[in-house]
Length: 122
Image 1 (cartoon, rainbow, N blue to C red):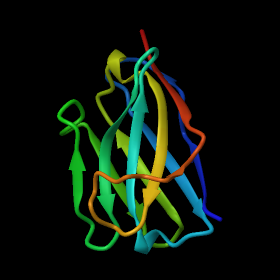
Image 2 (tube, rainbow, N blue to C red):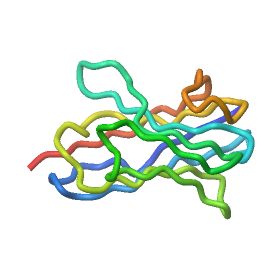
Image 3 (cartoon, one colour):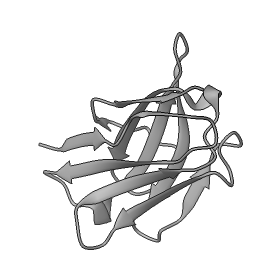
């Protein structure tokens, strides 16, 4: 049984940075596609970053290109989301998700974490 546990969410000021961690157990990072989803208050959940562990290919939503980076740790079973130059509209819950096989990047995703809260406010 896969278990995905997000951590690293916090409150930051606009322009700040956060690194979210998705700690993985029960499945191997290498065989899956990974994604981070963002659910803003009152809105539907949307994917912001995709990563295929088979070839390290990534894909980003236009709203986060150049600011967010999704990557894996080759020493630990974890997937990360580095978020820089955060904006108030980045506020919301961030979910880690996985699906097999590692393509297509856009899913469907069927393994989910419980989410971690990010608040960007001055």
